[in-house]
Image (tube, rainbow, N blue to C red; front, side):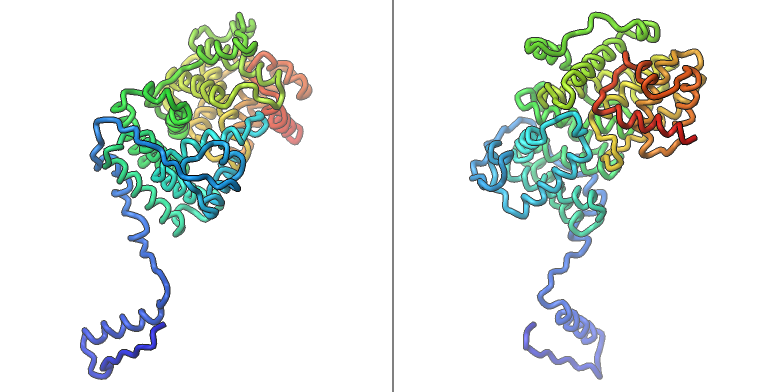
Length: 457
């Protein structure tokens, strides 16, 4: 604090003198401090929401060149082996590692045997596209960490990080590289933040901006040379549809290509026909095709226990291909399917794929309330004319997904089908659903836990 003294006439003080007194008092009280006003930390709501629509997007694609900065050798094998083109200081490493751990714990179920090192390496290559992308994503991760750790998205750190993200996106959208891969990555970061906070309107604005960017680039196929980025675009699109119930804005189905590639390695052989129980229940050819794919995937994972024999890129391609076909067939908040069997297959397969895409534990990132709403609507119907085994499978996969957030409302439905099929124990129930999609390492434990709750009634 300065030793300089300032004298003001406090006896005959006029309005200006009083103002000076207040100023000097506050100067002494806040000496050496940096005070960030909330208005400076983050722009007002409309400025955040309208980042895309106020920007001038360049019409020509500018690839740009990646940076060639040294990578710290102590940053870990995953970081070092990925040839990261930016320098990451220790403080940033802590933020990144914390975010990755917290996110991984809420996304892909670890029991599937997915290599987190492989996932981290693929993800970091997208994250570190260039310096601006790195700084923006770092700010996004800090915001998400604040939310994950219970500090909220209105904490000073979260607000400051969000303002940095918005500033980076705005600058990129008004630059010659407005349609570059790195700019798309920044917009994806904004969408992910809003999805995490369940801000439908904000996420939709950014998603529409992303659609326009992809259209100006010439469509999704223009991203084929960078699969991680392309799949991130698809994932954000699918998650939005699952989270808010609407249709997807893109479509991608690489199932045939993945099948050919897997078949060449002696894996993922096509089932020649559906088991008879399925033939009796649905005549929808598109639904049967998806059902066959999911049954094959289940068989592949069950045969290899906890080791995922599909590489992570192809695994994500399978997930996106199935989700896109299901959501194109019928958005979650569309007109309900009138055929009960088709409705149970469609929603059951959607939930089944969700359990492979997002952890079914209580700390998962997304709840996808339209899914739970659709389950409630379907189970409120009179399903007495439908196959008992189909109902049993549907109730079990629905219960595994919804029980952590919906309480015990699904247990009475399970009790009804148990009595209808005259099942005595869990082993008998498993035998009845063995021809339906089911992954032992993923579903056996929560399925049995759900069944055991019947014994407490």
